[in-house]
Amino acid sequence: MYARILGFAAIAACLAVPVFAAVALGDAAGSYTISPASSSIRFSIGKAGGGGLDGAFGRFKGSIRIDNSNVGRSRVNLTIFPESVGTGQSRVDAFLRSDAVFDSANNPEIRFRSTSVKRTGDTTALVTGRLTARGKTFPEKFTAELGGLKAGTIRFHVTGKVMRSRYGMDVGTPIYSNVVNFDMTLTGKRG
Image (cartoon, rainbow, N blue to C red; front, side, top):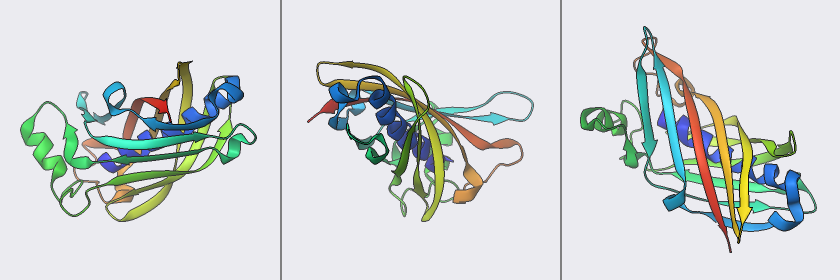
């Protein structure tokens, strides 16, 4: 489940790159390091009968490279550390870190590596890549929207959905949805 969330975050980062490229690629071209202090990776999972589970990852790192001559060559790399998952409920957090879900002791990272970035509008892009969690890798897609560019800092809003069962995290289904919704704000600093 969290691996999918991380995958979404990574995809979001990829989408963010092409989105800005569509707006002002020349100004945005370059390499950026994602700043966790001004970024967030949030997720939600629905529950039958209402409610569900909301959470976030506190630790992650990544980079965005925007290619000004060919948006399709832009790249997004995102790594999420599942032991940093937080829901506001210590028992739920411990369960998510356990081998029933993330197995963070044996799988300390969830990785997303973009393979394609396609502009879908003036400020939006579709980022496709490979998400790896619990030793399983699958293609995933995220939508990114440029939120701003100022003084060497770029911001993207990234969203996407990941099927957690693909990564061996289907505990609790069908009571809890198999779909993990990701909502990320990724801020990158040039350099």
